[in-house]
Image (cartoon, rainbow, N blue to C red; front, side, top):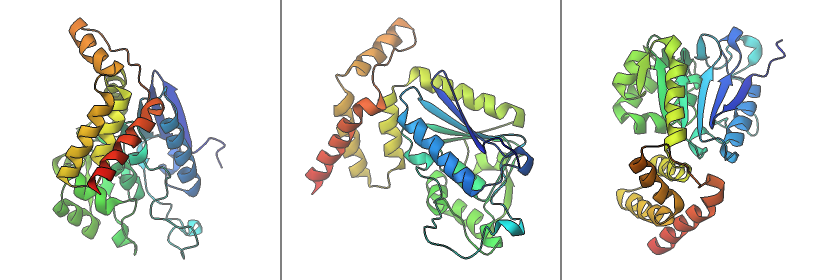
Amino acid sequence: MSSEPVVVLEVDDSVAVVTLNRPNDLNMFSGAMARLLSVAYRECDERDDVRVVVVTGAGRAFCGGADMRPQSASFGPVRGGFSAQPIDPPAWEVRKPVIAAINGHAIGIGFTLAMQCDVRIVALEAKLAIPQVRRGVLGDGGSHWTLCHAASQAVAADLLLTGRTFLGSEAVQLGLASRAVPADEVLATALQIATDIAANCSPVSLAMSKRLLWMDTTLPATVALETAYHQVVMGGADAAEGPRAWKERRTPRWESTVNGWWERVLAAEEAVTDKAE
């Protein structure tokens, strides 16, 4: 057994890199990985010095899926506390953009975890699949929602009801990934995007925009929340700094923090809800 942690978190210049770290086992998912990934996500959410998160895998795979060896009992009888969503908080609840750098194969929960992220950069030849229906179970991690919303009902049905394997290049064609690049360029591409976001985008604006993107609501309700969120930030320091930095052709110096402003964001949401009722 390796003494290395199965999830590693490193932060540099406002960008957190979370690495699934079982390279000798294709980063197969385990209970320990679920716990430590949850801890890493929670820390990234709570730290104001983290503005963007990149998730990747050590070695040649992103995550090879659940451990299928007999001793793992991955699909054994359900015990109390079981959830098809083993990460708490999931990536969609982290109040910073989360980029999946899918450097290699992402199978089963490996791919459904990636689908919980906001942006996906994938290796061209990476093998991807949600094959659980071929194993006597079914897709997890909210995949019956995330695939529909990232692509379409037709794409979700194709992948979830066949369990077929496809490549990273097709993932872009299907609308499930933003870019497909050679495997050795995946992490660098994700970090380039993350660094640009961390430097040039307001943390509070990012948090509110991401929150809206993941809400399952109506168009009128979305417009109402957009209006409320604008009322939170317009006239604030960042709304002045953004245009000023653009005019002066320099990197913005953001003053806002997610934790410092979040009570105002929630209050704005509550006001919209009260008005609707």
